[in-house]
Image 1 (spheres, rainbow, N blue to C red):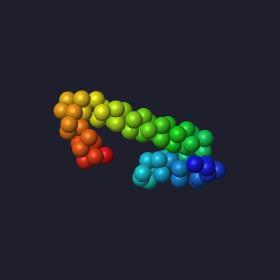
Image 2 (tube, one colour):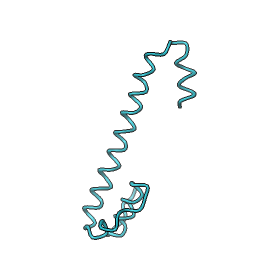
Image 3 (tube, rainbow, N blue to C red):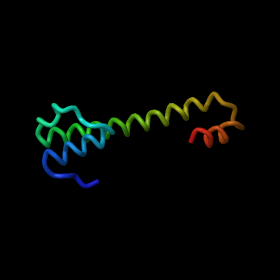
Image 4 (cartoon, one colour):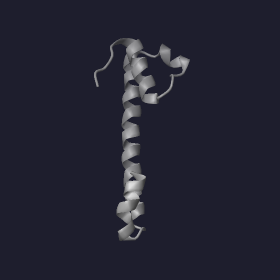
Length: 76
């Protein structure tokens, strides 16, 4: 994803990563700090999604084999 330049672009990128408007105090931060926050948030969300997927797969081990495929379709 191309990065927007300047603090306004970095603030917009952070808000996109947050999925909500950023707190007003964030507007006072320099652009590189906002970029760092947006990157950290994006990476944390990716890790969280990966871990959640792995936890779901581990949980399926407790389901009988014949039901795992249909259950994956329902959950997926």
